[in-house]
Length: 125
Image (cartoon, rainbow, N blue to C red; front, side):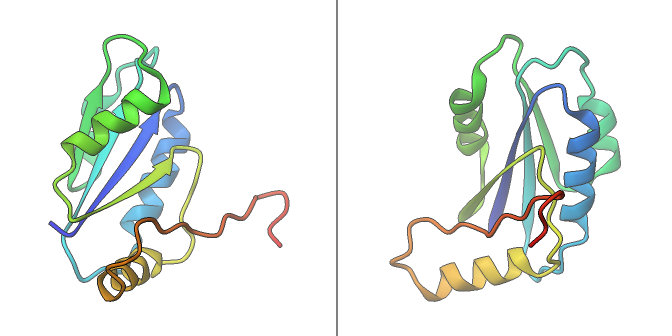
């Protein structure tokens, strides 16, 4: 497993769907997994999400643990050589971003963290 994508969510089912659809459009040549950590949403939609997306694990907190503990839970479940954290209210529009990020990390072992440029819907420039 090369990459683990960890997504934290809470009560944002539709945004999560949009993000997962954008991940499915990625052009990658390596194995990856997606780990969704749901921080005790009002609705338990884990089975529904898992049935619609490949390589996806869904972890549901039974009580609120908030961002850092939830993110750590995802990290501790990750099997990938690299871990990519992304929030549920994001979408990925560049279909090569994950491939490019992994290639960069493989070439530069001295890099400890890599970030992406963020654009806003209402301010795309």
